[in-house]
Length: 264
Image (cartoon, rainbow, N blue to C red):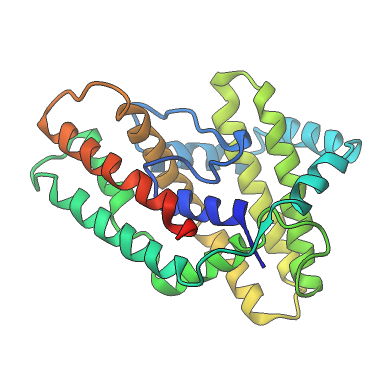
């Protein structure tokens, strides 16, 4: 069974900079990183995360989750399935993304080393190998599934972890905008750490490897998402030069096509 939220999360994640990852839920709104590349922002947050600077916040979220009433969240997940999605949507999505990214790269001058051009390249250059994309897609396929709806015990463990962090990320709507981005990224880092730890006891070697790949590529994917969110925000404003005007035109020309893929 294919889930609409899963499809949208994968589409919007890989199709950035149109919108940010898992854009169907307000839990995942991104704050612009503005004057820095996404990889620089994520690297700084990773350092703080590993040095324990988010421990207090992460513990606070853990305590909130332990007391949470998950009835509404579980019902929302149970109602989030659809079955009338074209079987070849992933292939058509990949083809369309490849086409769009080629046009984005070609729109830039090779000599342009501006921050804007760097963000465009961050989004448009292939980030993962086809094997890595398949592995990440495998983990993403469990996003927003209802508890115990996996094919086996291993999948159900990941579904439970995903639901835990969906709840925690939803609490981010109350955060100070100045700290929201870093705290939500720290939650994503902790989520993948927990999935990786859990996967060490999995019986399914394919799923175990998929989780390891998703964990290893997380920071690069987060960085791309931040750059995509910045470009999306900029595209709503007046272009400052011909290069921006051309990039924004390309982004807008593909936006509807990405959204329509699963409907055809």
